[in-house]
Image 1 (cartoon, chains in turn orange, red):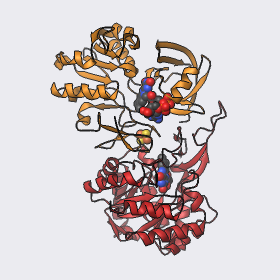
Image 2 (cartoon, each protein chain N blue to C red):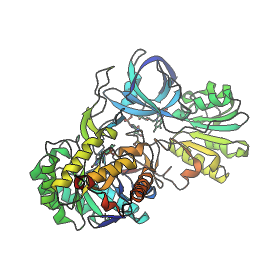
Image 3 (cartoon, rainbow over the protein chains, first blue to last red):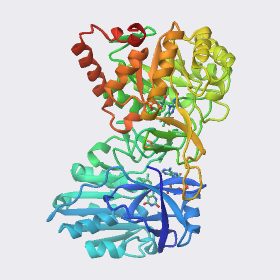
Image 4 (cartoon, rainbow over the protein chains, first blue to last red):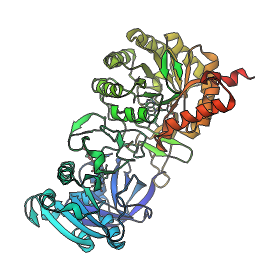
Length: 259
Length: 300
Ligand SMILES: Cc1cc2nc3c(=O)[nH]c(=O)nc-3n(C[C@H](O)[C@H](O)[C@H](O)COP(=O)(O)OP(=O)(O)OC[C@H]3O[C@@H](n4cnc5c(N)ncnc54)[C@H](O)[C@@H]3O)c2cc1C
Ligand SMILES: Cc1cc2nc3c(=O)[nH]c(=O)nc-3n(C[C@H](O)[C@H](O)[C@H](O)COP(=O)(O)O)c2cc1C
Ligand code: FES
């Protein structure tokens, strides 16, 4: 598909460095955990999780995201998607645990909405460095029980998401859905492995995307050659045992770099 | 089984260069999916990030891409080839590119210790400034680069051709004169798409190369012409997504068939196509794949 023209209709400041952009175009078939390619014309095209059917939630980090932050309501971008494989959809009476770190909350917001709408129980651990960087606090708390952690202790438990997770009995959860910075996900994976819950866990991975449609191979992970853009971005934890998660990834030249 | 340039392939399907070929792990995955051979991403003398995104889009008729030859350079890539080779018996062919004969030789020599089964020279990328097709449209350059690499390595050398020329046979002959063991045709056709909402060309590089179903008739004709003009084998690539396409390509003259864009649909395409060819041969009472290679030249 060619990019569709999407006009910004609303901009919400989630934190000083994170904004949600809502568009006049809605991807009604987007499933929680799928992503769109956001084309900032003349700059770059980058992957963003769908945080709403018609929205993305973006952290400002470089060229494309900075240009996006300069945009106003009425400006437009090109969108392609939804792409990739999302989270397993929760069913009525299931109980899921959501673990979100920083802007990793973006693809988990719609999962929490979906779960509570279909009658599944939701517990969330939401972490960030400081209290004002917490994303979708209200959204997660209206879906169910919410545990907050901050690195500096400015809200909730002082520490990391794993501080709370370590003390939890995870046997009650049908699934554990995780997205956040790579080191956080690697640490969560270790804890879940110790608790023997890896096969019930799903991680939303990040790798450098070029084609985004499963052809070029830029996003392939070692050692199975899984394409994050097509086989993922959501991958079952059991697929990540002894993988490159938390160790290395490829940059835009496909060179191995440490994470 | 089919033997091309002295290399045995368990079936005539191969992964085309630039598709899931930037890591040893992904090459291995495709080998495990049933490909008869795998060709790596084109590797050059220096690490290269490629063109900005969008670098590939799907159109109704096929795909447009302008990756810009992103690659980690031969220095880092020899480990990926070693990794792929250590995990499979499927032949791993190293695709390489450069700006001149010295570059090509440097990359080929740099990768030689990883022992690829053959080298495929990419003189045909339509959208990388100073590389690929800017060389591949010049018969003298093609001949001298082919000769230089053939001199430097002791495995077969294949030359991948661009269809963006007036006469592909002349370029094929230049490769053959330079000592190529086979030619591979075709690379992508120059193409472009524009976003009518803004007027912006969609690809980050503005233009790129067309692949997929749309290019199949062009590839068939190129393979047909090359088969007639050359004494060396022709490997067909362009728009193959079913076993029928592969059989058609072989009847035009292809000894083997590479598959690129169709991996988008499924990575299982190699075993699907290989078994489709096998069943077709049985149904029609052919004794071996060789019976259909170039058949359309023989029947008339
Ligand atoms: C499946 C997926 C979903 C994502 N969802 C979100 C989200 O919901 N919200 C959010 O804020 N961020 C998300 N990201 C990360 C986001 O894509 C990058 O932050 C963005 O590409 C940065 O672009 P830039 O031009 O501003 O930065 P640059 O200056 O270009 O680069 C900064 C860093 O961003 C990353 N990056 C740049 N280009 C790409 C690319 N093409 N593919 C992947 N990473 C890239 C690299 O790590 C790079 O080092 C997601 C990434 C992936 C793979
Ligand atoms: C994303 C992409 C990247 C490619 N990269 C290369 C490359 O690095 N070297 C090369 O020789 N051909 C490259 N090609 C061309 C393919 O190998 C093939 O010749 C062409 O796509 C036609 O085959 P198809 O229709 O089966 O895709 C690339 C094609 C695509 C779609
Ligand atoms: S980005 Fe091209 S295969 Fe994933």
